[in-house]
Length: 177
Image (cartoon, rainbow, N blue to C red; front, side, top):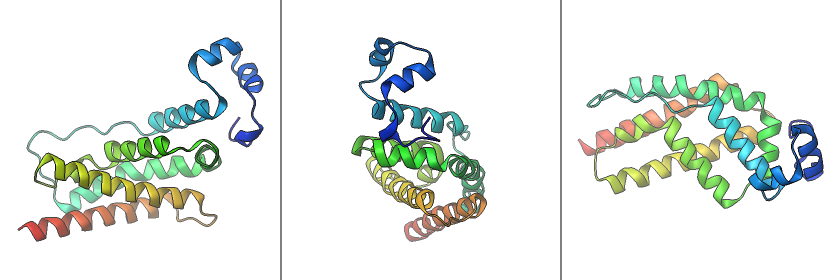
């Protein structure tokens, strides 16, 4: 429904009718349509973009290998976001909360950046802060890309994101050497 109707125009009655459930069943899961929309957004995103397979312990990726892994993971994500642009923009605009965006940043960190963050040797607190920093920036770039009328194709966007992360990791590695 979100693909075709603004969230403000979707009622609980419409949702339960389309889902074939009762109002009490809806209310057992969600307090309102906006919460249901946030859950639907994350469900769709998690289904389209699962956790990556972990690298074998002790694997150290070169900057080029890191970039290739990010591209392979990011391109299908950007293709999915592009195909469902209206849905995601409507969820963000009408149902986005601080908690929603914090969860989105965590999602980005866990699914797009694990190897990049593992490449940052150091104390766990430093890696955690760096991960949040990188993921926040990538999330914001992705939101702006999603909301733009004229956007780069998914493959170009994924390459740019991968190059940015790889360059930053490479710079950090060089500075630490």
